[in-house]
Length: 43
Image 1 (cartoon, one colour):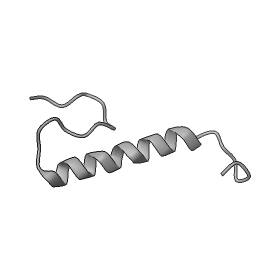
Image 2 (cartoon, rainbow, N blue to C red):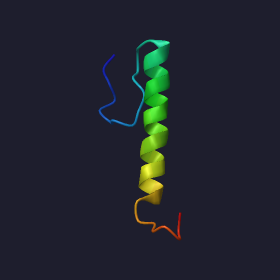
Image 3 (cartoon, rainbow, N blue to C red):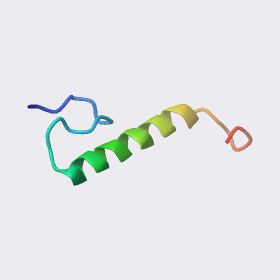
Image 4 (spheres, rainbow, N blue to C red):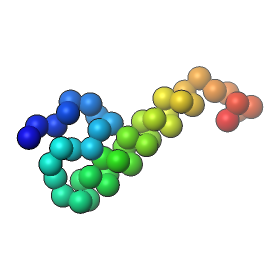
């Protein structure tokens, strides 16, 4: 299988470590997206 093409998605096929790293990357990207426009008071 090939990768999804989205950097925040875990790989379709890979080792357990690659899936964990991919899932953490997705969480980081989601958090960054949701907090991007917040100032210090908003955080």
